[in-house]
Image (cartoon, rainbow, N blue to C red; front, side, top):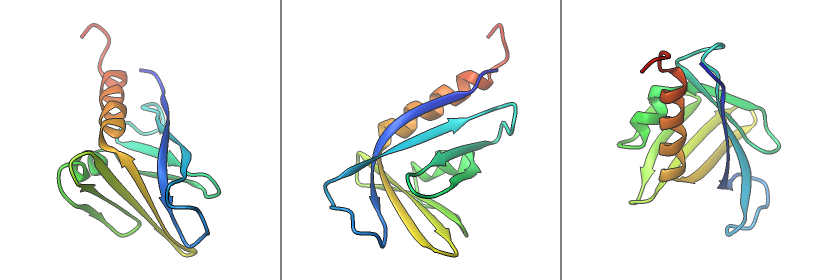
Length: 115
């Protein structure tokens, strides 16, 4: 089993002043040795968020989640991940294919050797 790390570009919508058409670098991580059920998202200027891999997968098809992390499809080609903390809300818009590619890589990394 190996660590999956994928760099992505996403639109970040926060209380901060960021032009709408500007994208930010985001790091998607999966480490089956730490927790085979969780993925991590590292946003610029905030901490790293860890949440259920199944939440990410479900949210690509229909709105999912409650509490700190919510995921939902946004049109045909985008998905939104919303993070809630004591300091506010961060809304990150991804291309769905980026998240799907990441999920496929996590399942390949977690697959037993010999498959």
